[in-house]
Length: 337
Image 1 (cartoon, rainbow, N blue to C red):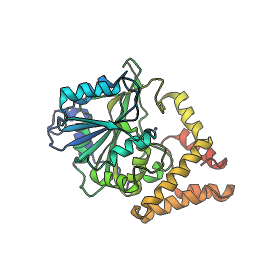
Image 2 (tube, rainbow, N blue to C red):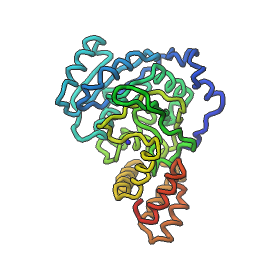
Image 3 (cartoon, one colour):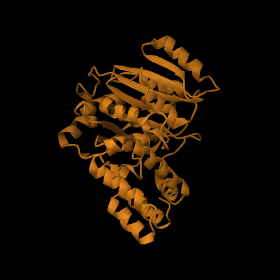
């Protein structure tokens, strides 16, 4: 559709999260921490069963699936009912969503008082999870203090509509932080898993907050409020690319140019308007350093050219790639931020 003060993970933790660590207890999902899987559904009949099967195959055994259906007209509800009959109502619950779009549907799940767990994982209806998806996330999250907002996300394997691998998502090398989150989401919501401290921030900002996407907003909120983010370079899901993706992959020059081109479109300025306004709901939660970044970025956007460029530079906002930062600079010149 996506600042954290310490985003570098020590070598020991990276070793624990590496593929070679899959034989360790935590990597197998031996933790008893419950994960609430939050799925937004809408006309998902074509791929839903395959995704449900991949969730059932998770190495981490303690999960429950909550689905908010946003008004499907196909067999989505019938498929969910069949799986609930097979799994039991303690494993799968579903209900009608707010019917106000993707972001609101997911945030309504994240904010729903009746859903209680140790961790929360967003799930799209059309992907395929790797068996270690939840165990890797829980492994890292359990190294965090419960009072610290924490968000796990990862790289993805790209697949086509038939499930055939077509490549990997871009590997982000720069640290995740608020200065990055203000102008870019580094990971899809379909890879995100977060703790209760992060969830409480989402609930405080409200399910009705007007934002571009739920995943970008989650990245902004966690980093903005001084939380911690780990971007796992090991892919944990098969991200299906098909004609109905809201935002596709940015792999390859065509994808990257398309994303960079968005920076020059008035859409991007409108998105920033929404996110900046939404942040006022939780401004008091932002550390002073992040308040300064927000204010410098927000104020610079509306200045004449030279003060605008100086202000954007002073705010220290950045994107993950050279091309992205070129686009960011061009958008600043054209007053498209």
